[in-house]
Amino acid sequence: MTGSGRAAVLGSPIAHSLSPVLHRAAYAALGLGDWTYTAVECDEAGLPGVLAVPGWTGLSLTMPLKRAVLPLLDRVEPLAVEVGGANTVVFERGQRLGYNTDVPGMVAALAEAGVTAPASATILGAGATACAALAALRETGLRTVTVRVRDQGRTGDLRAAASRLGMEAELRALTAETRDGELLISTVPAGAADFYAERPRFHPPGPAAVLDVVYHPWPTPLAQAASRSGATVVSGFDLLLHQAAGQVELMTGIKPAPLDAMRAAGQAELSRRAAL
Image (tube, rainbow, N blue to C red):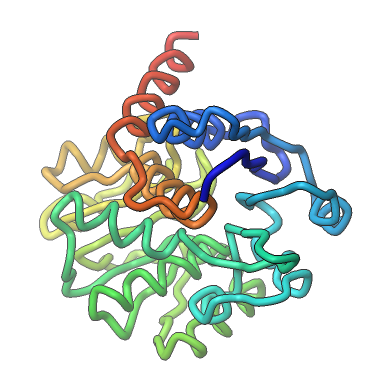
């Protein structure tokens, strides 16, 4: 794709998003000087209006829009349908096309850390990212996953996603004193898993690898506990980087995305924020 492009990340709250830094770094590395990428505060009620604004090339979606966008799209890729959420919209020939780059982004982030075929896995949380984690774990060969939740009455979307994905999600209380899988994926917000790090989870045989989707502040107590135990730790930044790379490729049509330039820009911004 050549010429100019206009893209943005939508969500609420959105001011903290690292996506503009990553996408702009990609445009600079690719020589796309006429491309722009901004952050737009947008909740579910405002989503139809923002989608209807003329001139978009692509949009990234975060909380709480990944599920809400589906009925507003003309076409949705099968993976996004299975997961029940799209984090990427590409505008092409007058149509809105929906994709999910969270799943391949998670697979890539884990693989980069050497985690490709865990024998078992546990997910913390039941939101949209947990549904993406289910699909990512399916890619590693798993068919049964333990999911720890605070409220089993709010797991309908996750259970529906598991059914579409052909996965079995064994629901357990977040506080249950039972052993976790070889891979632990925390999809809950910053602070929500802190108590998890204070318990004897990481005494052998604790998880061999931990992915915490939080990227700021970093490291989280969960990541620190995992690191102390000798586990492989994958950060939310790793996930954000790889899913953003997928978005850049979809929006610009250029492959591969300049991962090194995006990583350097993102890490520099996180260092700047940590120093504040």
